[in-house]
Amino acid sequence: MYRTLTALTLGAALLAAPHAAAALEPDLTDPQVVATGLTVPWGLDFLPDGSALVTERTSARILRVRPGSAPVTVTTITGVSPTGEAGLLGLAVSPTFEQDNLVYVYFTSASDNRIARFRLDTPGSQQVILSGLARASIHDGGRIAFGPDGMLYATVGDAGVTSNAQNQQSRNGKILRMRPDGGVPASGNPFPGSLVYSLGHRNPQGLAWDAQGRLYAAEFGQNTWDEVNLIVPGGNYGWPTVEGTSTDTRFRNPIVVWSTAEASPSGAAIDGETLYVAALRGQRLWSVPLNGAGGAGTPVALLQGQYGRLRTVERAPDGALWVTTSNRDGRGTPATADDRILRFPPSP
Image (cartoon, rainbow, N blue to C red; front, side, top):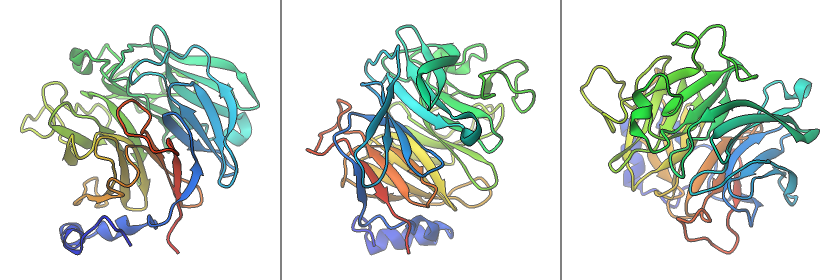
């Protein structure tokens, strides 16, 4: 099925991880190209009708994308200030969209990173629900997603100031958990009166939940180790004291590490017992078998070098995987059709 896997590599992965068979879904051999000619597509989420909303980091546009149709611009978010890695980043559709029609975005303004929401039927009216997150041209985090508890989670980078990550009073270098209006939830957060859910992060950009409601996050390391972490309330993941694993009992170790050349992970999605992680510098899609107890088996590299830098992966309501390229972000070598959104259908 996969041109990028040798029999030896696949066999080793299956022996190392009994759940790795789930990583062979869906069929990645013949993707449908859903969109071409985009400029750094970043956030992606699905509407109830199966179409997707996609952000472009530098143009500040939100596009509505359907297989077989040209993308349509829904709106342009006002106040976006794109510089380096900053700009219009994550997007999340309200879990109660059919009642409230709300879409959420994370973006960099001239003064901060912030989260806003708008009604899709009146997209020109945007309400900021969280502001004051330190911004920079690097390490802005930016992924947002609704958890199975109905709360909104956000990954926030350290904005290039490493001390932010261990400072509980700073919301940078954290994963935040908030009500849909941006307020502190009545229960479930580890620090009273605070949005901080976990700390000690450098630049996390992937969020995904398994069927048991466990949260996993993908995170950029500095020069040595990229990570996948199992996120628990109040967990401290070590940055900047630790990159990768350690024996320091103050910090939680990642369940997966890669060299930064192999990964530079951004988006993440879970399909069954498999965590998919989109890799930028690594130019591949990592398939990580989950063991059902919060751990992971041996990752398998898919699509290696086939589509260049991969930014986002999401599972569609019909079971397909959608993957965005990021070859026009200043660090890639774009093909004529880049940037693209690829749809990999579920296996028959």
